[in-house]
Length: 373
Image (cartoon, rainbow, N blue to C red; front, side, top):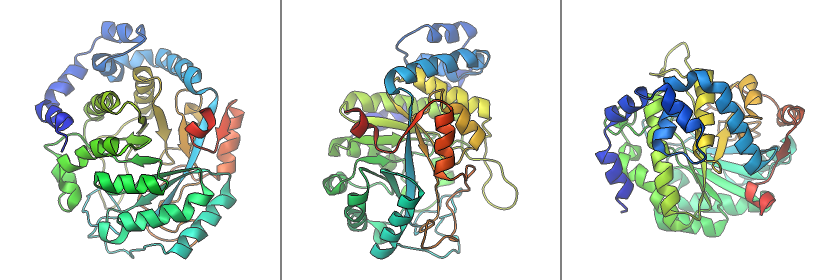
């Protein structure tokens, strides 16, 4: 097992990182804004409270850098949930193993029915396959079969599933896999077990090592993210930025994507976020990541409201989901199954496309690399 970043996490004190961010000054922010290439200390300054008055300047620079690298384009992708079977007990997730819900595992016929329904929604060429973490029901054999089934219909296939071994990833890459999104949820190692009390996901270090296994397998793109709402988001994303830099140096042929899944406050039973991130803070974070890394893909899902997503089109986001269903078989086979999380942007993909076009941008339905190579 590759220990380099695991050792780095072990040696990094969460509270010290938090204090370092809080101590950043107006001067630190202005220095960061005037640099072409930023380091971790600059990133801390740009997500710190001291940077709040500079949001417009950050937005302008984020827009400039994104235009330079990506042009006036937004890539569309769509998730396809294959199963809600899960062996984990994540306290914040609707797929929690202890929840008394109907567990669905799509058959070959149902997968193809979903594909046909997705194709009627728009010209999607980039699909994200999502499962609960259940190796017995949706292991490498099931995923390999699903990839081969849908490969004729999509130019780019991504997965967001349980962590696997290097040889499993190599096998799926051979079948046609392009990208893997694996979220650490939180980099707070001491508190991680509170949110993941049972199941394979409880193993913080095994999950963290997944990124190295992916890099060694030669994955084309890997996606990182933390679940914003569990812990102090500023500290979590700083640890993620450190992780990104480590991965980029070690696996320089791989492309990287950052996602920003944000939990929202809600009424009723169930897990409630420990930390509430405001819209301005999410925008600040996205601008900070663009200034920190000019080439990384910044993805924004249908968790966010239409107004926020529309505003971010010109300011740094490069990839957006559209028309998403977060329940297995939600497009055709099982439209009333339990969602993994509640969406905020329920617009039809065509309506979202029109919003992108109204902003002076073009929707790219295929993967970036097929377009830009």
